Amino acid sequence: MTAPTVLLADDHAAIRAGLRIMLEAQGIRVVGEAADGDVAVRNAAALRPDVVLMDLRMPGRDGISATSEIVTRGLGDVLVLTSFDEDELVFGAIRAGAAGFLLKTVDAPTLVQAVRSVAAGEGALDPRVTRRALAAAAQGVAVPAPARHEQPDLTIREQEVLDGILQGWSNAQLATHLRISVPTVKTHVSNVLTKLGARSRSHAAALVRAREN
Image (cartoon, rainbow, N blue to C red):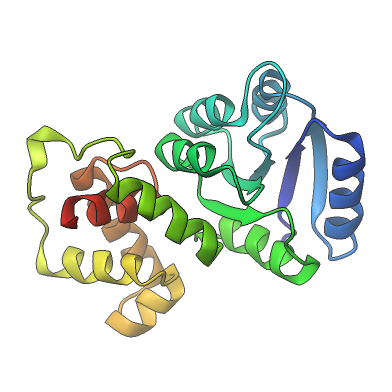
């Protein structure tokens, strides 16, 4: 299996150095670094990493804005690495399309697995971050569900896939549970996100939870 490639975006050089050592020790290739959002976008465009490991609070252009452009332009998947008290920033990153969220207290095995999961097209959510983000959604912080889909017209299979997404299942787990192939799961996930007007699996979950509350 080809090693995932990663771009590190954090304004602290010491943190970037520590992350590089941690990831490269596990066979993950760090192809570049960035100390602010503008450089992160430029380097993502030039290097096309599988994953951008993104800090949210940086001088100049912040991580949310950078995440939005990177996702919109298809320059790589974004895995946010944030502090526990940055609820509003984390939720903003959901809307921007981040594929995963971890706290900066994460241990090496969890971080490595998260990078590999995101590089494989799956999500990686710290349960504490997820709960806090969904709580914010329930309180009205989230962007409202698209007006054109008050109740998205999902097929039975798409509803099953959405139920799995809400359970935090990976594409592989969905494929096993539904007895279909992973490529077919990815097609259904794409259809679900389109109908929900969501940018990512975590954004879809937040929109559903907000609607239910």
